[in-house]
Length: 193
Image (cartoon, rainbow, N blue to C red; front, top):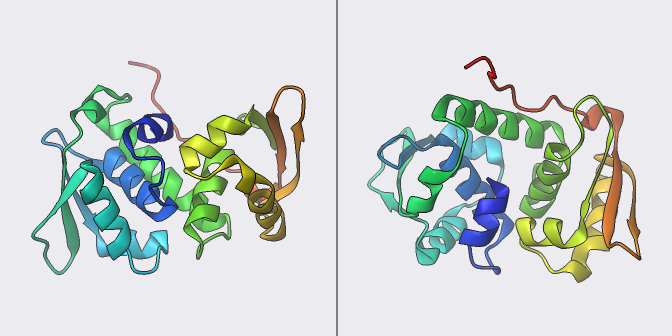
């Protein structure tokens, strides 16, 4: 879903808006509507999400609807999200997994650190503590310039999410190792169907 959102959202979309878009895309129903309980929004720890909602409205991805005291109601406007897989039960599990992973990653107060931690955790090989990806992929999916990669990864080390990282100059590949506490199970999917 991060790959799709990287293509659908304007490059300048902030990390907080990307986290909201991810939760909305994973939680939407068959009518492309979402009710995000305020508890979920508090769990994201994005501070005031007003700017993030505005960014997503202006990008044409979604439109906020009149809400009640318990949840924000949203209409997804991007029909391409219906073409994404897996099915809704698996997406709901993935939304929950993403929330728990970010909360446990101790990057709770800075949206870009949350999104970067989620990106790296999601791309860490199951049962392992290390992973690899192209630098450009991470920058595009998290919405930051490649020049900001080094300071961001150093912040993830300081936050106790990564133990180490390196970029291979010839291939432009990012290699990392998660802190032992940073290893989370991948979302569970039912492959029996």
